[in-house]
Amino acid sequence: MGRRTKARECALQMLYQWDMTQDPIARVVDAFWKVRSTTEATREMADRLAVGAFRDRKEVDEAITAASKNWRFERIAAVDKNILRLAVYELMRELQTPSSVILDEAIELAKRFGEKDSAPFVNGVLDAVNRAVRPFDVKGQGPAAKNKGTKSTKGTKDRE
Image 1 (cartoon, rainbow, N blue to C red):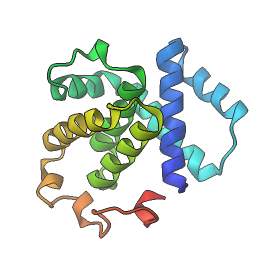
Image 2 (cartoon, helix red, strand yellow; image 1 turned 180 degrees about the vertical axis):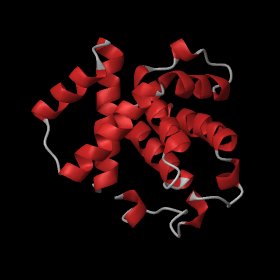
Image 3 (cartoon, helix red, strand yellow; image 1 turned 135 degrees about the horizontal axis):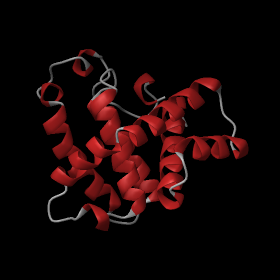
């Protein structure tokens, strides 16, 4: 598993823990790293993603709500909701990461941690959010599209 993939997985687990306990995010992050170990770079990325998604959750949750047609936000499964929070935060704030990588990683998290229908649901919501927040990327323009790895495959530098 690549460094960035591992960081996203750790960030998801921290967001899920916060969602279940409603403990302060700083306490969640601290408790998480007391039982996990990883490289400093992975930890920094995981912390940045988890804390950023938490900090911007109002805007992130609004984007998810707008994109999830026929689903009330409160009814979205907790795992799926936090995968979406993580990916939507990345789409909004981590513009150096191609949207194709973010969507692919989120779908893989949904397959690994979600229910049978999680991956298609996450894919559909994120596709709609991506069109709304990165219209330049959808059209193959903008900062993320300048990276050579916009079509990500396992093992590429973008997925590490």
